[in-house]
Length: 413
Ligand code: HGY
Ligand code: MN
Ligand code: MN
Image (cartoon, rainbow, N blue to C red; front, side):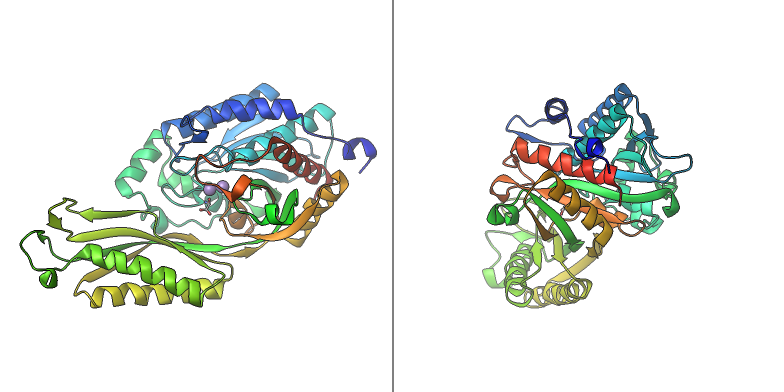
């Protein structure tokens, strides 16, 4: 790499202006954004991304899974594409950095390369993947690109078939179009993603950049406890078949079990609903989502078995029925050594302090790792907060991450 290329940096003001413009789409007024996948604000953000790509003079494209891309033909004829990206959808009432920073840094990198008139070994593609957060089906867009998604999985979306199909229709997508988005791995040179850390390791290490070594696996299930609706005032406490008690017992038992037997894993019950849902009726049904994560496949498997036995035990001890439905999930991955090396080398060239670290959050990179060399870098999250309006990353850290992504892209894998 010559000195001119090594000296390339992003335009921090331009990146900031785009970041602020994007953060206004779906803004919740408290610094966060609410852009659940395929909702109106998410679609508006994606259209804005395409408009920005076209304004730069990039080719733009939307595939059958709704993945939005802006591409720069800077490689020789027939060269594969190096994908740079992340996701523009957010969790409910999430933060404005999660996913968005990676997509915008990718767009900025393509613009810098275009303006420099560089010819690389690869073309460059900035990509925004559909539904990384799993509003409907986690990592939908990136799994579709890898060809790993099945019609059966599309038939079991976490949001329910009716809501999912209505959202697809609103985005002019279908199950068939999603399954058509699989790409030939030979056309993809690799995938690099910049993301906020969403934890405190970089803060503890006082480091600028985290080069990600591996990403946890996760599974999500719907658990339903079934009891009997009764008058909350007249039925004795001992005669109740209270589905809510089963849910409460599971919440406490799952946390205790994971903290003692699976110290590197986590479990979360983020959604719960009682039916019929009245103050004076003993809950007949308790419907909850059970999500668990582990850094290695064997632990993820073992944790699933132990949790299932806990679900049953909580039901049995309260004379309840229990149903468990698998929603979605993704296997843990170790990220490509060459990709890690390219990102670490870029951080070193720029003079940034880096650490190698695992990811406790799931990312599109773990889907892409199935078909190409995938790598990720993190930048610090203030307080480790994320998935809420408290999410914040210092602008200098955002620019550092964007420069590392740019330098890794021009250096190649
Ligand atoms: O949930 C996750 O780990 C990611 O934010 N989708
Ligand atoms: Mn994310
Ligand atoms: Mn997220």
